[in-house]
Image 1 (cartoon, helix red, strand yellow):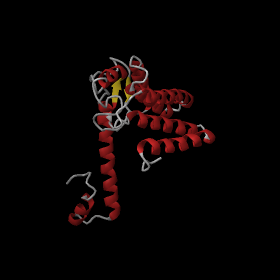
Image 2 (cartoon, one colour):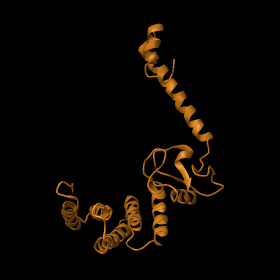
Image 3 (cartoon, one colour):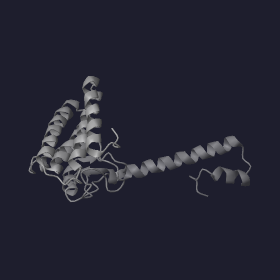
Image 4 (cartoon, helix red, strand yellow):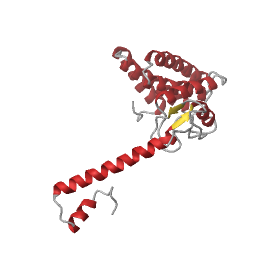
Length: 219
């Protein structure tokens, strides 16, 4: 029998007619043993960077904030920055569980990406997207004022980029990014209890979405 199988009590009861109280006690005892064993395994396994496999002796280990646990859920910031530059999704999410980076790691990665992207042209899509992503991390970590300032600058530059560029009509990346930045600003206003400022942004976002992406676009 597998002791962690929820059906094991029914099998035992068929063979050995124990009292229900005895069965409950036996199950609780088994669960306690399994939990204790897992805690001991976790405690015996030191955290390591999932990129280089090094530990704290190499540098500070940060939680990735994704769904991974143990050594798959920690990394050195410097290692992750180098790794992210070689992967399509590296700046955004974990390659294993596919969940976004969160917490302080996401914020540090966002700052690093913006700094690296600063060498790109002012209207470059990747540079503007990096700024939006940093804005999301700032908002998630409670840095509302900084997120607001960055979002306003990014929205202004994105609008200028759309006017200045001669884009392929099928390339809607800048228009979609503009809507994303407007959404960021609107939610930051809401989190700061500034509903008066949030409402016009939402109305403008819906109108812009319908104008650029079609009448069926959702607000």
